Length: 226
Image (cartoon, rainbow, N blue to C red; front, side, top):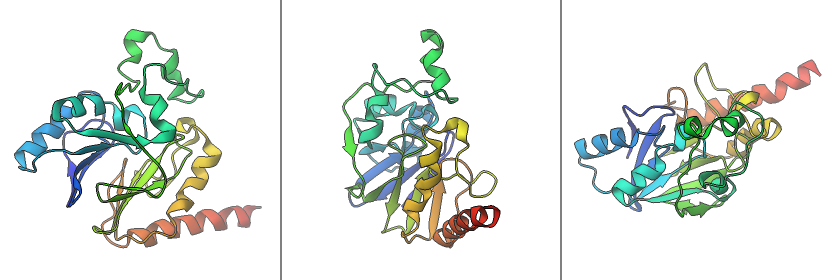
């Protein structure tokens, strides 16, 4: 079972339920945990087992700590992003996200995620709550996709977005723009019918073909202009 959670601010938040438990993927900005709790209770879905982050940015992860505290769910994030969830986080590069590290502390707490608790550290290829981790670094060092073979679905986080058609994140929000341009190719061999993006509408049929077509266009275009 996959459902988008309504009322969450920031990125799109999703529920994924399998025999391995109920997982919330990217619960959104600070304060959005209330919307998650309301929806799970209204749908009588039971206990949340996992809060899984596709990456550490505040629009995806800001309410992760509050949601874990409210439900007892365990937090999971790729190992390369874990340090960014701690009080003594690494300083971001001078992208739009990096500017947050230079704000006064009173303002920064609204835009800088600080989960402040131990998390399960994910690595490429491992499985959690029925989802296989696909590491696609670039947008952040630990950006991941989550592949559900049982649901024929892929959660892309910000490896790709679908706000104005499928595209990669712009350079000014990427930790490494060079790697972010390469990251979507990690998805090319996967098979899935549906794609769920952090930003933009889901693709509900033939999603893997749509993503591969995008990757093909990206490959051909430089050759034509080179």
